[in-house]
Amino acid sequence: MLLAHGVGGRQDLPIPFSAALAGAIIALLVSFAALGVLWTEPRLGGTLARVRPLSGLFQRAVSSNGWAWTWRIVGLVVAAYFCVGLVFGPDDVDNPTAGAFYVLFWVGLVPLSLLLGPVWRALNPLRTLHLLASRALRRDPDAGLRPLPDGVGYWPAAAGLFAFVWLELVAPDRATLPVIGIWLGAYAVIMLTGAVVFGARWFDKADAFEAYSDLIGRLAPVVRRDDGQVAWRNSLDGMSGLRPAPGLPVLVVMLLGSTMYDSLSGAPVWVRFVQDSPLPAPVVGTAGLVLVIGLVLGAFLGTTALAGRRGATEPRVMAGELAHSIVPIAVGYLIAHYYTLFLLEGQRTIALLSDPLVTGADWLGTAGWTVGGLGNTPAGIAMLQVTVIIIGHVLGTVLAHDRALALLPRRTAVTGQIPLLALMVLYTVMGLLLLFAA
Amino acid sequence: MTPAPARLRSLLSGLVLGAALLGGVSACSGSSADTAPASATVGVKEINVTIAAKSVTPPPGRIDVTKGQTVRITVTSDVADEAHVHGYDKGASLQPGTPATIEFVADQDGLFEVETHESGLQLFQLAVR
Image: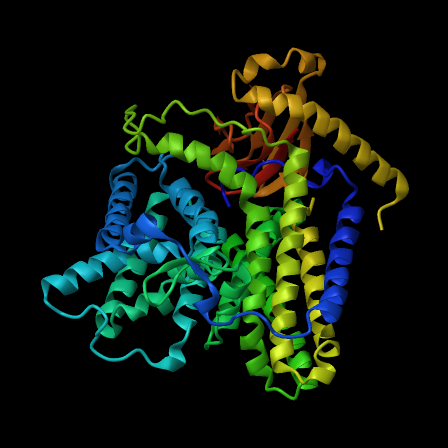
């Protein structure tokens, strides 16, 4: 990332780093042991009949047609406002476009989705444009020219996510307007073309941002059921409802692996390596990104195959069935990694957004904002980072345990998970080491 | 894994920094630059960097600075370029062989990258605490 990350380094931890590491591992081992003894039946991912619908006026409001259109229009207006700076603003550090795209949008989708569910589906301006065009042509938006083959799965979204993380973390001049503009232009063309060919379902499986928001949104405490009712539910039930599909393991692993690469690329040792290398920086960066994602994926596929062997299940089935357990780990890591960036650059970007043309205007009244820590201390941030990483891994362990009970024979259900436990410990240690790499 | 003295040191510095910054951060949302009479006793942090044939000397690393301290960065490049401190948005244009200086008070805590725009090199990371 070209923008400033905030404080919250190894030196800021109020406890020694080795103690934090040991604490994280102990938390995993204790939860694993406790789960083995106390959680002996699969409980998660059941039907949404158990959830409690919201009542009364609020339910009617969120179920109305006006509600959906309100958010579609909000999405269009926000996207149009974003395009003012992108298209007409000067290409300098006071232009809010890079901050709005990489910080407010990409990072901001994490807390929004975590609280409210798959919000980008409701806001996505491309989906709305496709819907409006379909209405104008009196066509069914869900009917394309041909059906989307099931075998496609999440592969288009995984490719889109890779294209995005490559842009965010590796691409030369990635904070400049032409680079962001060309990327977004290509993305819009591919999304809209796909929607014309395959119908609106294309966005579900191919829009990287919808897939990202949907994965994280499965941890939200609210859900919209198929009947349109909005209800409270257990976040773990939501996460467990993520069913295997082609490309899903790669998609979730990429979320974790790319964030780990971002941590690595900020470490002075990596900066020195890149700058001393005779190869151009984007080549080394691309190789590094692919390598880190590849290692995280290799560890995941290897351990799930081992766990599957215990239960005489196909390795591929096991990887798909356990992919959901990686999502909370990735979310914990995303929060830990981006918290200070979001806090500091987010405030700065909101100030800059008030003047997207950099003419001294103050359209939103936020131009005078000064960036403050909002009560966050480096020690507090460092502890928060360790805490969310541990919570993410413990939730991942719970999800994997519950799924293993359903898949593996009773006799080997607990011992069969030992490779998965090793994987969780490995991810925790690597995650903390990279996060606090300095 | 970490030797005991380092552990103790990091614990102590963590506690001290945590306590110091508890006050510092809450004050920073108001008037940030003028709140640092306590740390004005710390001297100016001099940082010298040379760029030759796209190679940075000393090699890029992390440089610790106390919040409120004045930072004076002197960059000498063998080609014309632009040096830039992210976050603080301070810069200087570099003429071949002529040292250029960027001086400012590090009044925002955080980790800030200092780099050149044309050659895209990272010179160092400034860790302000």
